[in-house]
Amino acid sequence: MKTFHLFHAALLALALIGTGQHALAQEGPQRLVDGSLFVPKAVQRQWDIRTAPARTSELAGTVELNGKVLPSPDAGGRVQATLAGSVLPGPKGMPTPGRQVRRGEVLAYLKPAGGAIERGNQQAQLAELDAQVALAASKMRRFDQLEGAVPQKEIEAARIEHAALQKRRAFVSASVNTAEPLTAPVSGVISASNVVAGQVVELKEILFEIIDPARLTVEALAYDASLTSSITGASARADGAAAEATLALSFVGGGRQLREQALPLLFRITTPKPAVAVGQSVKVLVRTRQAVQGMPMARQAVTQSSAGESAVWVHTEAERFVLRRVRVQPLDASTVAITDGLHEGNRVVTAGVSLLSQVR
Image (cartoon, rainbow, N blue to C red; front, side, top):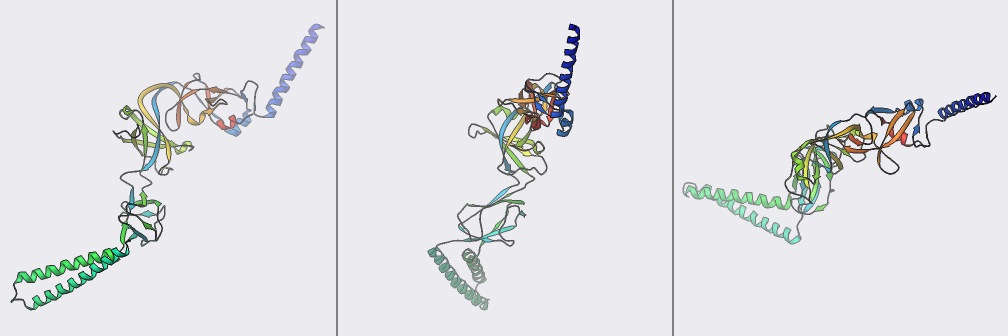
């Protein structure tokens, strides 16, 4: 009799377990009591969950630096006011951001602005030069009529004096009535236009900025002067940008003068048509000759735990995922090295991490 009751209890327990598992599968993804996740296979396929094995290897050490996108020094330029005056539209109107320009193209005109007294003095000087030119022309004609009776050297002197006065009058007249053309120093795209038609500007004021979008650089600040001798490669990524927005960099050189206790390093962006803007802040990952032991993993595999620590989701069973706290070190703009918290062969979730983190 006792045996019968035990057998009946065992069957009831198995039935309950089976019913619970069936209900769990029907309910969909959920967080279990121990903090792990139950995610049915159908949901995993729907969320496109992808994993990768953790393998330890020797990796290049990296240093993360703060950087900023700048125009290339040999492919960008500025148009500044060489004197105080008012800006007038060029042959194609006022330059607008994004417009393609060629080197030497007239962008606008700058009409000199002077006071009433200054303009009056220039007009008086121009009138005086007009009189001198007329006298020199009369003298030259008179000497031409007396050719043979007047020494040839006096005739040549009169001609030279007349020509010099004409040139002087042309220069003074241009300074009074002619607007100075503002030309593009390089070919590229107008990145900034700081004036409108008729605006009065001061000497050295920046009017237009020109860049070549295909030739941009990144300047990063390093606090270790010895870093320049151990750089083997670099990459960058703008804050909040997607992984595919990674920028490939080529090291150009580093300065030898500190700026705010940091050494400026210059990198050239080698990625075609980079989706960044001049002045944008980026994170620069510099690879060095120093080696570290770690498990390379895609950057998007790393999430944050409830305590704000770095963590990854590990696929421990067919429908179970566990959050593991890890220690990471950046390798480049799209890859990190996990140096602690994982075991060899752990299946780490690399796609669908954000969806797993939302399961409650």
